[in-house]
Image (cartoon, rainbow, N blue to C red; front, side, top):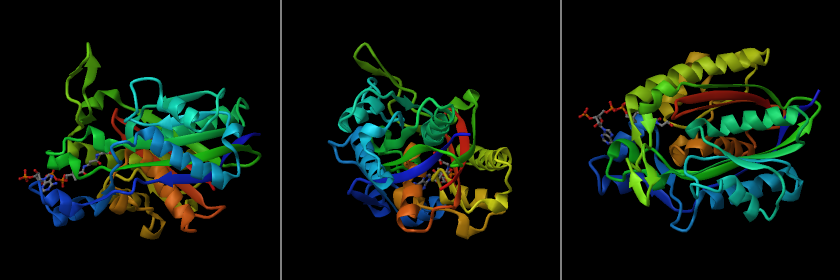
Length: 319
Ligand code: UT7
């Protein structure tokens, strides 16, 4: 039996750090409000010349280095992003070119904040099928480009960044189980309902959100899909060493861990210093805890995404 195993992680945050006080200087908000309602203290913002593929390249290079594999040894590239460099070609193709390789399939996954988990589940299935032996799965976002910087209800929440993992075929798991879901009837909870038509933007190019609606939906489905995934793996919640939910709001993360009966020590929190980086949030958090020596080989990690669509899903992996 073939499984897919995470053999390297990497991440990248653009150097520019934006604090809550910078928002308070120009909007009717405060550091105290943002911290108490979201847990966010700061976020990173990409430079003008940095696109998602640039962030993805840095994260991917670090993941490749950690894996000991060269870019030329990668059989499949998947990039999860809602902020692609172009309408087309895909950010994955642009990343492939920046990595200096060609030939292997490369495509984007669009599942907003669930994108990384969707990409991981897809790569896992393709490796388990025997079609590919290695894969690079990346979450990369420049959400700062799709925010209305005058809307205090959304612009304080998000940040830019990228995270990546290298997967390789192995005789033992690896990824034990993944469960994915979507409910397209919830499209209005969270969207960027604009498009380009005839050389003009039609609709809004800014992120729109029903904050409380998203909050309630997220807390419900993050609990449900965590239980489904652990059951699909034939394990119990007590066997999970780390929970990495999509880093949206510390109140959502803590409520999810509480409902699952997981102690605070098993909950990975990076939203305080990354903000919500959408598809990048889970691999960014994973890499930070791996590099800090907290998540170690043999640990079981439950990764969860939830976001626009609505989409949600989870993957349980032994590192
Ligand atoms: O990847 C998924 C992405 N989305 C999310 O994760 C969002 C999930 N939702 C949330 O995190 C929370 O709903 C928010 C942080 C967005 C809002 O927190 P809340 O506790 O649900 O606040 P609320 O929407 O009920 O708003 C309470 C008040 C409102 O004022 P009034 O109507 O009571 O006068 C808002 O206008 O807080 C106001 N408010 C703010 N005040 C200061 C909204 N944003 C801000 C702000 N600073 N930045």
